[in-house]
Length: 152
Image 1 (cartoon, rainbow, N blue to C red):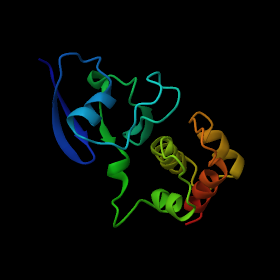
Image 2: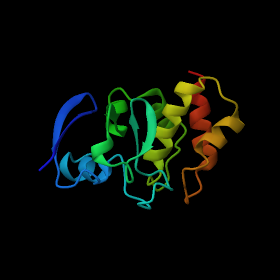
Image 3: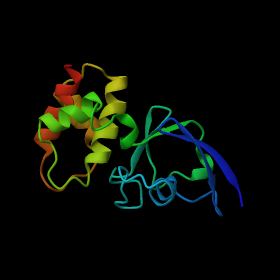
Image 4: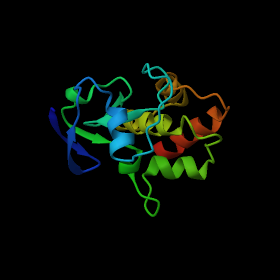
């Protein structure tokens, strides 16, 4: 059985998996019990499974565990309930969550985007989050939350 040395949320772990093509998402949820990244479409199209690999947003439902080279950060690794990441805090302050299914992807995508574009326009935020699907209608609050985080 192949072994893969990974760094997940600052912790070194070894993944013993039968198939190196297994999606990273399955390991994160089933083996490590991380519930931030969610299974949505399974095709890398909705964004619910987004994690960071070396600071870049990646769709973990289609990212093979055998291809992971670098540090993986999930929603749980951004901040804590006592000390949330500024984007997490902004989402709380703007009450940008309704059903919550897309929020992992929205936050993870926003954090990666704000690293590249620290002072975005509202249009840039909308464009950056466009690939992430949200069906419950909190888009305006999500955009306000990202703009709030950018202005802190």
